[in-house]
Image (cartoon, rainbow, N blue to C red; front, side, top):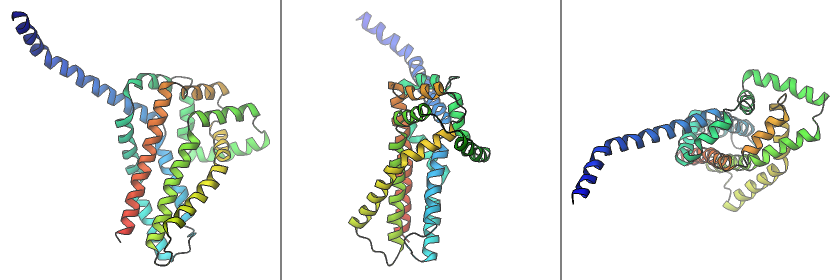
Length: 271
């Protein structure tokens, strides 16, 4: 009896400290996940894909009235606002990434070997980076990359699931534009089967050209970086920590786009 009472007393005495320790651990895990998310140039992906598709639909491919197409583009821009997309992706990543891998992921992403790779990704869509792209493309035309270099880039695309993720992201965006165009137009009246057919045709064409586009972009983006850096980065994605990281990251991007898509279509249908 005395032993039980002592145990209860000690537990009550230590409980505030145990709770504080758990709270501190949760805060650390949350901060580590924030740091991981900040190391990856997610905002560029969330910004560039909608911008590219918006530019295409600005040409009014379905031939709806000019005023309706302008309204469509305006609502798309509001629904796919970069800040909103980033917040959704960040929240989803934080809620779904397994924090037990935080230390491993931070160690590799912060390593001297990988930092230049991430810096190249972050700089790619900056004003300076866009200027550099022009020069780099010219240099690659004059001095074509070796097959070894191309193979290393293809391996990185494969291991990071970049092609698969890009296909999913662009399909979400394209679907929302097709459904939105149909909803805002008084003359299209597309059936579900017609919409699905248009989207499937888009995905099939994208599937055929996406790898070449990614390879060309990566050759430009990583120009000047040593092969072993890219190989090391690809190898990271084959580890348990890397697999968890890319899964959580890609899903966070898809979730952000899907929520924006749902909002976009809802806004049009409520006009």
